[in-house]
Length: 430
Image (cartoon, rainbow, N blue to C red; front, side, top):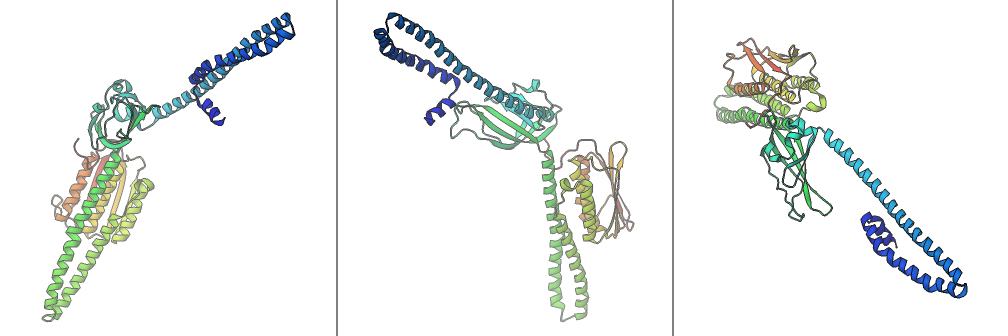
């Protein structure tokens, strides 16, 4: 009974009406047959013709209306339940549709042939196109290229070889011609019969992620270069020098002693270089601390680690920088301080951030070190670092100047527009 009750409750209204249409006539026929052969026959034989006639009128006059009323009542209840369920489903669909439409992420749906069926506000913000300009067009028309191409959708029933939700990266072209890297999640959609009806697609702007990846790759390359050009070569020189001193220890003990003192200074310099490299490997939580707090923390720790007295001054509010500007500007500061620690032989450093009228931000890093031979001809080890800083500033559409005189220190000045859209570092030309 429980199985039949569950089957009846879970059956749709159309199936219930269909079963009722086939079951009700036989039931009525059985009831009428039992009545005629039983109750009607007994009334005719024992109560007379009049009583039999009245009983017939009462039975058929009541049976038809009652059966009709009960049947229609059942159908009415089922229809009300169905309508209530449909209203709840429609309300949920409207709620989900409103969430999807208001989402900041680009969410759209595709037909099985890959053409666009829906387009939310996030997609309009990301692509710059309105739904009227996109619906009915293939999604591929807005993609420059796929970095990891998904399997295509197919019509028909889904089987073991049918596509599953896929994640891939692509480059899109906005309405203004700008090309943006995105991460795409494409999920196949199916009906109750497991037949593919299209796909839901979510696209996320990953320019910040790409910029962070480029910064990380560049930082790794810089550290590897520093280890190779600095520590590795220094240790190789120490090995050669020690081997030479080993052969001279009996011939010239006094000279060997003097050389060992010089080697001790070289070893201490290499230890300082290793400490600086290890410090550079420590991650800085820009998002968790905020830009200003991260700068303050980094400057204080860097000065303590490198034995430098660093004075930090901030004029203006740094809380409104673009998420794409912050990591680039922070890396410029890191590179500038690293150059001071490696080459300047300075004791004091001044770092100043200043918000200027017109939407410009200025960064100045000054030291009291030995300076550069000429501003246009920096030391060989500093050329790569300065070139990378110039590339970063150019990516931020800013300006960079370097002033230095031998024995008079060095001043680095950087100005960037904080209201323009920077180009992510490390991106390929699209």
